[in-house]
Length: 427
Ligand code: AMP
Ligand code: GLY
Image: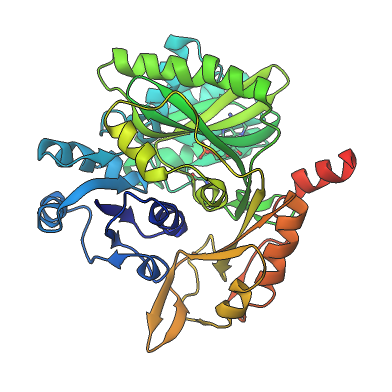
């Protein structure tokens, strides 16, 4: 069958590689794609915000399934538009994508369904928000309600910092996203990303990973979209997974069905593993980036078959097979990211880096010009390696990184540090 994949990041490059392994796949199109996806399928120059253009393309190219990568088109209602025109799409409807699109929606759903999450309050005006901060004190977390590209969250260590964040949000620093602010209790523990594939009724546990959100080594500096990941996240033990499914994911599936917005697609729970047990930090309605780059190379089952089953409301009972190997992804970013990245610099030597054992390179913000590969975004390349352990995957990934000639880029040097330390201890 012919598949259209929506997106242009490293996640979509990783999804494209996994789809390519499916015997069900005939032709793969990626809109708009990147130089990495162009090596796997055919990039299509489509404006994915133009629903009519996407639907027309699906007709012309006899697309049997549209696979949604990023959140914006989901929240923009592309799945609804496709379904209305009889095109099958993997991903939630606009109403179901509110789980990511509105933090307030998700917090209310957690409250109503007894899902463990940080205590919170929602505010539409500055004064009551400031008063709440003064009553509760720091540390405390301030969030813009809507999408803010990962920048709408301030984990404030002092009351002043929290007050400034609230003021900035109501002053419009986050556009409409900050018209409402959620203030919540600061949770303590280790974070993990948990992915389930859902068909509207059932959720099948898929995989775990651990992201590294801060820009600097040792988890310092500002938050980014993610600087690296490894999978599986063994901190999510089978016992914790069972609790995540029964206390968080399954009640969410029930609540979404009851509100008339059954959830289909990837449900990505950002978890805090606290002393009392796993708590939900937030939901995303798609695969994580860079988590997908670490999760999907381990998948041995058929991703396309699973996505089709999700859209048809017929997930299998058995969970998909994964390799027992570990995978680790290092993100290479352009200088100055997560501020405005300095783009246009040339990247050389990817071929020799890709020749390192167990290594795959996926593209995010790159572009090709006259046979040269140039940086064209904040997060630019993902270097993924498989290994018998996270330590081995890490060593291979950094061996490949060190072969890449790109003075205009940088990366964290400690991706996987928590797990590598645990592996060392248990030896
Ligand atoms: P989010 O955009 O909601 O994923 O938040 C970004 C990051 O902020 C998370 O990955 C956490 O590191 C942190 N964070 C968000 N909410 C909380 C919370 N209630 N307690 C502690 N840290 C949080
Ligand atoms: N890596 C975090 C995210 O995809 O939202």
